[in-house]
Length: 217
Image (cartoon, rainbow, N blue to C red; front, side):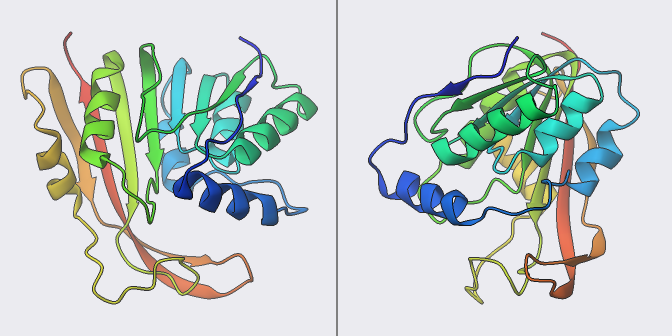
């Protein structure tokens, strides 16, 4: 499969925002897997995975370390480049393929056993229902779409708008308008957890969790 770092960042406001975000957020600590993704996928046999908005790459690296073949995409060339370098350094270069993709403009080709969308939020225009619908259609029969969204605003979030609406898992699922004869809703809940922010701040946050399994072509 091989690790790749594809393309340079396009000249758009969204791309510049996320380029700056990942240019300045270097850390000596390795990127960590999102705990709900680990919980949901740990019992699954490894296969092919697509990581939407891979960011620092914690999810892609965790999956690859457990035998998944991961295609990881992000709008930030900095994030993609860093993930590719880290994967090679961990001898996971054959398990991770990293690409710069603007999901507002295109969706990766292929079919997957797992599509992961962890906190796929942005302050810029993104047709999220269309992206997640495409993700559901990109599953092999038996494959799962795992969506974890913010259900509350953490003190360290870039979005501190007090009027922001966090769609519930049921609302997100309804927006996908999937045929119930071909997709099954496996999980839709809103667990709470205690966590820490990038500067060590502690807070209780809500996660909106959606798991959809494709049952037929």
